[in-house]
Image: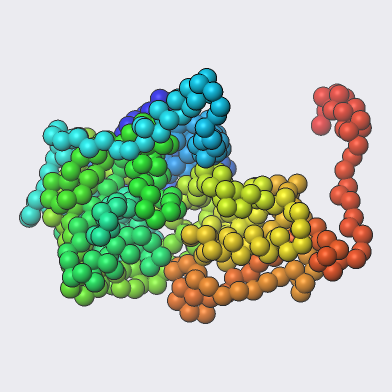
Length: 490
């Protein structure tokens, strides 16, 4: 079943027994975050929450309910992308990459179903009657104080729109970008756009500033779940997130033209904030913000967005998320990226068997990689290649292990790594870009990285001792104990 709207997704979560409705009054200022934080740290990520009675800052009741932790479990993340397990999309990507033209008419005809599926990927632009524009605010009608925008943590710089799809275009080539950037409310009609310098949206802004042109931008809140996820995905530059969402959905994303600027937005979106950035204006202070590292990121200067229109569905549901000390909802979004992008990583590095970014590392702080090691120095080749690959360049610690190690089992990965390393011999340091949110780096966005070769060492790598065997019970004994296990009362 294709989930075309956020409300379709909420209904599906409800059907799966993964939704909890809260009717008790809850404040958008801090209280909602505290409840969601406690729930997200329950085993398995807790349930998705739908707050039906949200109190605004002036004490009045919000006209719209608030949904949070929608993606915060493996089951909900898979449901969002229409699969039983996230690896299914990885297998689909593998099949697409293996589009060799077979011999004979029968073989060529066998390609047609896959080629037909590819034809579904590009979005379709429709005009007139879009649900996302059932209600339109312009000029003095625009009042963000009416929306249930949450303040997450006590020292945040203000209320934040968090689960966003921020749409911009490359001014030279016209290629669209959709990114998930936090947005701080500054007033009734202004917000601050937090796009880190490594992100495509920030590059679009730099190009517009060089040209001296006003930059249109749309901030979408709530759409079909595949599109929401795609905004968070680290796609290569020039790849339209709505095309990728079409691949995940197996159906095109429907778009419509914004009412006040030349950008397209999801036809079925819940809420759209349309506006512009004037590069001639001074940047504004954004932050602090309680971030996904579990620490506050410092206030800094970012562009101000002037809103020209706010559009929404009549029965809008306001979607949001929080970040903080992991694990939280963003871990499951990141885990989906792991599973979906593994085949693309293997395309460049075929020796990779699997990789995992555990919640404890906040994604970029720790990456476990298992490889099929064939020659000396291969672990270092892999870690250096990863540091040259998109946002993996921000990875602080990369640990490379042998293929039999289950990197998704953090205890097993550390057990293998800590037993296999000689710290001085097997550790390498290098310099490079680091995450904007890394408060420990020696300079803003610049610092060191550590690579650990925890693979089995070869003679060519100077290891002359015998490498021990892992302790394992023999298969016959395991089978015998399996047979009597139910009788043991254990």
